[in-house]
Length: 312
Ligand SMILES: Nc1ncnc2c1ncn2[C@@H]1O[C@H](COP(=O)(O)OP(=O)(O)OP(=O)(O)O)[C@@H](O)[C@H]1O
Ligand SMILES: [Mg+2]
Image (cartoon, rainbow, N blue to C red; front, side, top):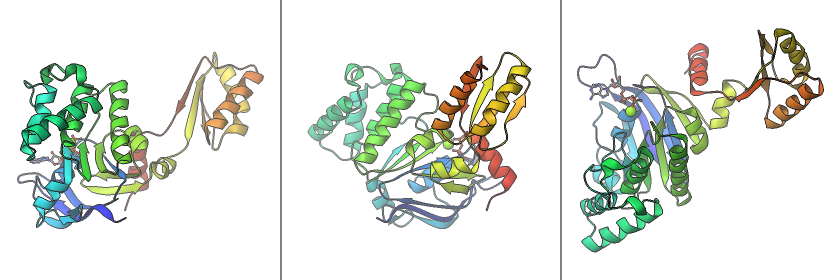
C-alpha cells in the first residue's frame, strides 16, 4: 500500500507571527494505518491538519492526501477526507440526529439518504437516547462521538481528528478510542493529533513528535518509549531502612540503577513479568511496600529526551 498522506518540507508562517508555525514539516502515513501527531500547545498540530485538509494555504513545500495534491487537487482531497476539528463543528441548538441530517445534506445526500445515514450513525455511536436533544446539553464524550459520526456521514478514506479526547474523562476517552479502532478495522487511514503519549500508544501505528513546527522524532510507540527509558516500579516503604533493604532485594530484578530517595525506591524493570517477580521477592524478604506504582514513560519524558539528546 502507498502513502495516504505525504507532506514534504511544508512551511507556514502566519502573517504577523514571530516564527513559522510549520518549518520543514515532513510526514508520511501509510494507507490503512493510524498516525499520531504529538506535540505541546503551539507545536503546529492544528496548522498541519488545516493544511492537509485544504482549509489553510501554506508558503512552501508540497503535500498529497489520498493521492491528490492539496493545492491543485483540493476538491479531490475534500471528497476523500473527513475532519473532526479541535472545536466541534456541530450546532448546539439542533439535536444530534438533526445535525447529522444537516451534514448529509451539506455533503449532497438526498433527504431520505441523509435521514437513513443519520439514523444508522446515531445507533452505531450509542446516541439513540439523546438523538432528539439539543447538542448543547450533551456531555463531552457524547459530543465527541457526535463529532466523529458527523465526519463519517459520507465515509472518508482518510480521517483527520484534532485532539479527539482533550477534556474527556477516562471512560469517554476509552469510548472514543474504541470508535477510532473500529474505523481503522474498516480500512480508514487516521491522522490524529494529541498531547497524550498514552493516547498515541493506544491507537497509533506510527507516532510523529512535533516541536517548533517540525517532526523531531518518529517511530512506533514502542520505539519511542524505549528511547526514553524503561518502565519503573516506584515503591514507598515504612522507613528509609526498609527502603535500603528493599533496594538490595530489587537489584537482581532491575535493568538499570536502583534509586533510593528517603523511604522510596525506584526500580527500572524490563516488563510486566519482572514486576511480578519483584513483588514476590519483596514479600519473600519481608519488606512490603506501603505504596506501589508502575510508571511508564510519559510525553514529558520523551520531550526531555528530545531536548537533552538533541534531534535531527
Ligand atoms: N491564525 C493564526 N495567526 C497567527 N498565528 C497563529 C495562528 N494560528 C496558529 N498560530 C500560531 O502558530 C503556532 C502553531 O499553532 P497550532 O494551533 O498549529 O498549534 P497546536 O499544536 O495545534 O497547539 P494546541 O495544542 O494548543 O492546539 C502557534 O505558535 C500559534 O500561536
Ligand atoms: Mg491545536
